[in-house]
Amino acid sequence: MICGVILACATLSACDTIGSDMKSMGDVLSPPSPQEAAQWAVDTTDAENMRRGVVLLGTSSFGGIDAYVKLYRFYVKDMKDPLVQAAAIAALSRYGQPEDAVLIAERLSSTFPQVRLAAAIGLQRMHNVAVAEPMWRKMQDESETQEIRIELAIGLGQYPQDDSFQSLVTTLDHSELTVNLAALDSLRMMTGNDLGIDRMRWLGWYSTTPIEKRFVAQKIYLYPTYRRHLGFWDYVVFWDVPKWEIPGLPSGIADTGSRKTYETPAPVGSPVGSPAPVGSPAPTGS
Image (cartoon, rainbow, N blue to C red; front, top):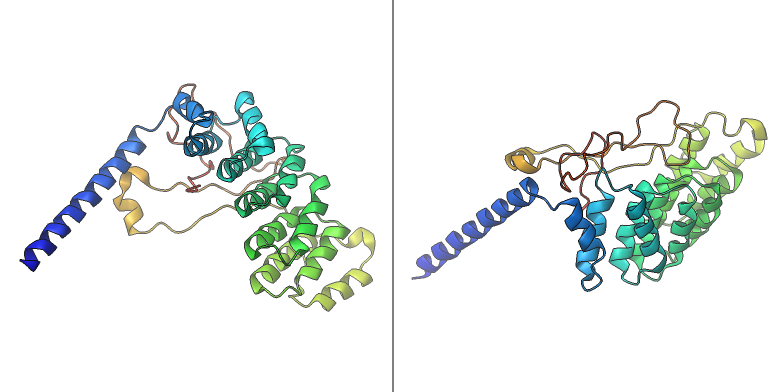
């Protein structure tokens, strides 16, 4: 009797798994159209639909259409739902102008951690010296979450200037090692030096290095992207093999020859989720 129940449960579980996989394959092979994604993004009756629509538009190769960018800005500024607002921040950071970084930086003071985290990550993709100060001030706030301070420390690597440098050096003394290491990476980025997490060594170097030579060895800053090695099961699910986004220059930094993240526009009317150009963002699960 018990064995029969176990077998029945296992059979049902297997059927559920197969059904889920088939549904996943169907979703990939027949994804929402741009029109459907746009309709979801403005569905004021369903916040989850709005979030899904914004994510689909913001991670598509055609998400930079002016009407969509205006929608992202509106949601970043006025949206009350934190998940929709966070999705809009991510989309605007990909397709907005450098001046949009100021609007995104204002969200660092949001009461919702999801929004603050999205803002910290989004500012890595946009270069505007006006946001460096709010970034390092928030990074120095040890009451802020560790995750958000790490992302801010990473983003400050694109601002080789005295206030960002001093703030990153101060952060080397914060209690979380991961925050220390993120700050160290940005100090390496902006100076070309590696003096470890010893704050006094960095301050000594700073005081003995002429102003005009402090940042001459800076490295090219590329915003970080998620990436991992593909495993066996990634290839088993052959209809949905992950595609990773390539790190790139933040908008607002002159491109001296590196490839932009979004090079090839998708054909008009192509479905959301159709194969994106090399370097387009992989779904983040937002």
